[in-house]
Image (cartoon, rainbow, N blue to C red; front, side, top):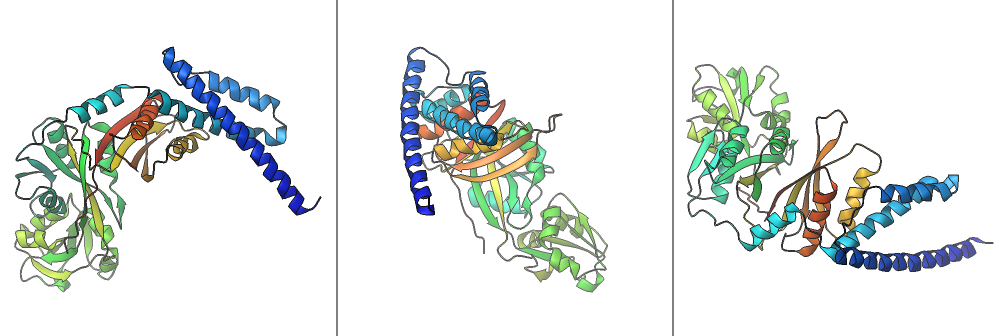
Length: 382
């Protein structure tokens, strides 16, 4: 038998598999209808494991693992189809439907919380989203979360990711501990300068202060100043304030607005490694404000640290034709070394397919948290 004949044989087998696959999915639809009529849940603990054990037992040893993967995928596809047929509800879905049907009114003149002081990049993001509105400054990111959670302010602005230095780890940790919704997103172009008190020259500097991400974003410039120590502070505008209040030859890496706000002279401009340097900020709120324009859904979830679990999670998105745009992982901090995934994907909670996916995730996972549905915004403050 030559190669072409072998390929023809594979094609014929594939046609048979496809026919059987479609028959199985049609039967799955009938199972969904039966469960719906009889008030039965889609996912029945134990049955899936029993079926996979039987499949492994009757498989040839050489193909045993592959057979388990194949039938696991078939079962996952079947569950997705059943969910899309039944639209089984969960507390999360009920909350989302109610929020969309009866949205909370947006405050006419919202109060905004930022970490830092005037001139911080968070302040720039707040001005872009809420021009002319009142901004309250807090000395830590956690206090911004708390102010939102307690209703002291309407919105909080927080940096979550930089295009050069990566994710802001502390924000993800705080997201796990606090209750909130992401209402908006904005990307701010980060253009760092080196500033000092008037009369201080670059050669006189002994220490440069800034946030650790800003220091990382300007690492190439700093390497050319081996005589200068770098010191981490909570934010770039705070670094400018510290330098302005010191009588020592200190410098600050900050925005030009931050330098001007604190009366500093700019020694060098555009010192970041990458000209295309952006920070993504999220705008959080206590209330959920769903809109038809929202195009990004954010969730947090945990899956067990065991074989194939992440693969099966991704299958749910693929089967539902939903595009995952970001996945960020953080340790759950338990004895099993489980992982919490922060996931962004395209969609709107008015879409039944999105609701079906959220229902499946919230029902089947031990830890699931809906973080928001919001429009993606852009700002290039050039």
